[in-house]
Amino acid sequence: MAYENDSDLFPTAVKVLVAGGFGVGKTTFIGSVSEIEPLSTEELITAASIGTDNLAGVENKATTTVAFDFGRLTLDPRYVLYLFGTPGQDRFWFMWDELSTGALGAVILVDPRRLETSFEAVDFFERRGIHFLIAINEFDGAFRYDSEEVRAALKIGPHVPVVLCDARGDRSATSVLVSLVQYLLTAMSSHSA
Amino acid sequence: MAVHDDELWLDEDAGRLVRPYTVSNGRTSPTKSLDLLSLVMATGQIATTQLAPEHAQALGLCNGPTSVAEVAAHLRLPAMVTKVLLSDLVDCGAVTTRSPHAAASPTDRSVLEAVLDGLRKRL
Image (cartoon, rainbow over all chains, first blue to last red; front, side, top):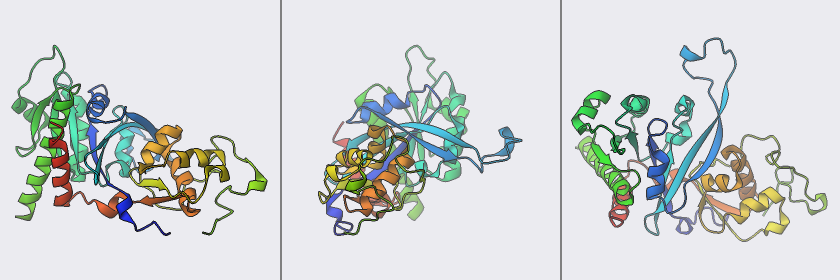
């Protein structure tokens, strides 16, 4: 193919995941950063290897449709950032390797009124070795935890950044991504040191 | 450019053979390894009029570098079906593609620094 290796034609696409429980503001966050209206698509995944705890008695492979939202941000002529929202309601996305493979890192959005809805995402990224930060979406009228209270509740280590944000605000959401990438660079330095 | 007749419905004599939702002909494995973030772009070598409707529609979405995920969203088709369509288009030379993994490793410092610079400019 004549064009196959002509990489100058293409920018480099990179990916950050936006995770968290249902209704925590993932799509709002993506929309605040994205240069396009958030898009939605779906994938049929096979969940053959899912834990047996809640599929006991299911003998055959289970397939499930997983829908996800995403947005795009062109950073410069060379780099395009895609933000993929993980399907919040659905445990099956954990089986979906493609979504997390190659991600630079993840933002776990936390609703301070429902911290427990983000536990699974924390577990998932820790197991996968994907760096993440916690962004507390400050819902109007929500009780304000300080970041150390959230850190303790989620049982995450002192190195993981915990930041506050308003997912509706462009600057606020972008700042969260800046914090994430700064953390990724720091983590890389400490690993190679 | 060789066209694989068994993989692509390019045969003009055959006309439009394919109904929506059978667009991948039951295939769930694209011939090319495509990721949601693979970028695709039309080469200009094949006109949309030479293609079956679904392939033509997919090709029409690839005028600039476009991710597989975006094509799927605009086609309102599952990502896997979209990958089959796009790999058909790659096979016949209508689009060219670039895998995200070919260029960007999550552990590549220069990638992270470029992303950081791009984000900071927006603040």
